[in-house]
Length: 168
Image 1: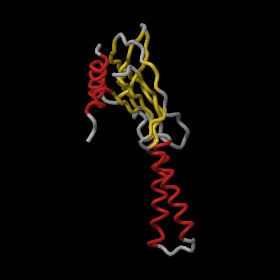
Image 2 (image 1 turned 180 degrees about the vertical axis):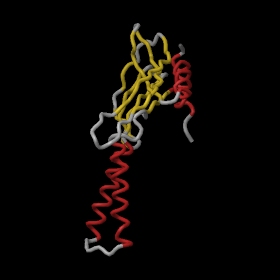
Image 3 (image 1 turned 90 degrees about the vertical axis):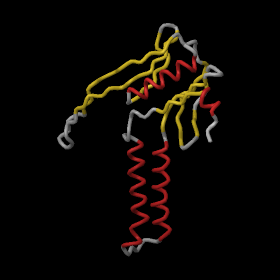
């Protein structure tokens, strides 16, 4: 059961606006390839030694799981007035704590733009309108920290939670 005291004194924001692009997509591909390598010998006779199949398939699975588990985020500690921008591998958050500047206010900023890939003659040219909701913390009259959200309701809930935690 989670500790309610820790949940009230900290706010954890995972950067998930990238979806399944980049390393996460490669990780999913490696997991599928590793599973395929391990499963095929049960249905088709192969001349490859079982140890090699296990090493190749198992290695792809492990590397894929590591790549899928990698994400970044920001952790705010309201009680100790500090924050940490981190990279996470599995459950380990790597990063250093820094002092949280006195926050004057927090606001919601809506950022919309048009995303399109470069036509290359092979893949179709995709164009889509993207909206990102940003919780922006203002310190000393300038943007100090911005947290991106894909859904407005998540951004509003986070903004209220941060305002309560920072007592602003």
